[in-house]
Image (cartoon, rainbow, N blue to C red; front, side, top):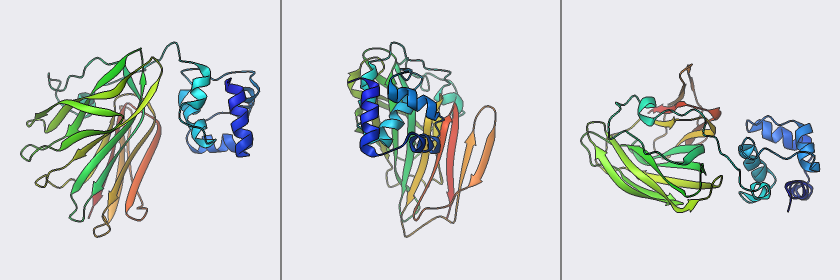
Length: 278
């Protein structure tokens, strides 16, 4: 099925106007004109296979299609651009050593989130890091990932919980850092995408943490940082700090019940830190 046919049928079934669809895309941080949507619907123009990838993913969500259903009608992209990219070490202000050196990989992140579950004693129980990866070439499968550890406590237990497994996990106590290799369950063809989640579970002797940071080495379409607190101990203050090479800004956040979240669109390279006070 061609893109225009699939797009038209889904809009008709959902009962959406192009103006409504344009408004919902705008709310999610994507500026696509009604004229462009009209040309996509009529077949007069097709979305660019690489440049419009993130918009197509949002369209699939908005009009109730499965992930990749519209993308598949365009065929695999011939070329995927990575864009400017920094290292985890440089953004986390860590020394450049053999331990912090990342493997040369053909996986590039398109969007991501990191969240923390905080217990009734105020300790972070676990963190979850989700990433949407896209392959730069056929067969891409592995990438270096990092997790916060402690100088003295037992290291967190890390594992893949969605679409991946963790291998060769090592600890550097001086840096208070874990490094591992994330391996997809199956290699990706060029241009294809995969969603992964890694979980880091803290041991009982791990010290209390009052912040959580997402490190974005490259520009991502969407980044979310969130925390879920036990109802027995909800923070009095929550803040978010967004830092790039050009700027730094911070403001308070309101809790939504027992959770707090912040999202940036078209963000990176940079860091987003969520912190709280009890």
